[in-house]
Image 1 (cartoon, rainbow, N blue to C red):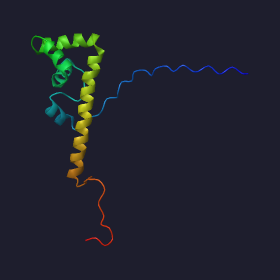
Image 2 (cartoon, rainbow, N blue to C red; image 1 turned 180 degrees about the vertical axis):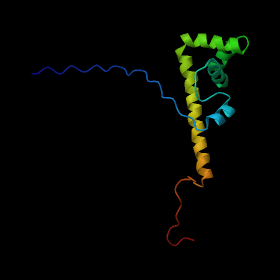
Image 3 (spheres, helix red, strand yellow; image 1 turned 135 degrees about the vertical axis):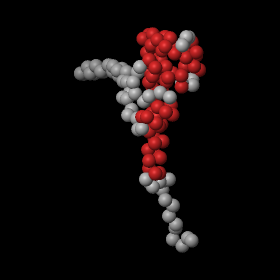
Image 4 (spheres, helix red, strand yellow; image 1 turned 135 degrees about the horizontal axis):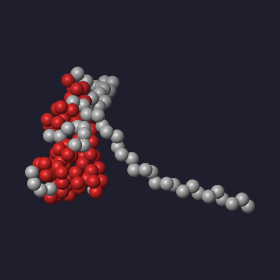
Amino acid sequence: PPEPAPMEVETPPEEEEEEEVECDYPGRFKNKHKYPATGEAKSTMLAILRKMKRDKHTRVYASLTGGITQKQNALMELLKSDKALERDILDHRRKAIKQWNKERRAEDKAAAGVVDAGPVPYREAGEG
């Protein structure tokens, strides 16, 4: 009898970074969220971290001491070794942008008179 073909070994998929989401109205986004929709500058990363509400993130922010510049530098040093925190920060912004875009697009539709309230109820024959 022929030998069974060896099973192909599945290799785990490479960890994919989510693509950057383009922000609708980035100036308004920055005014509301207090951080920009793009970039990874020290000030940007610190501003995003400051807005993150999970306990572990508030503890990280609280552990950064000194003035703003010292906090920014300390965070950048931390991010060199803690890639998970960097992903969390960028993911937080990505989710905020997605939610922002969803809300702005709904506002734009409403302003244009397009209402998406679901299916229109039709009367059955003989009603009303």
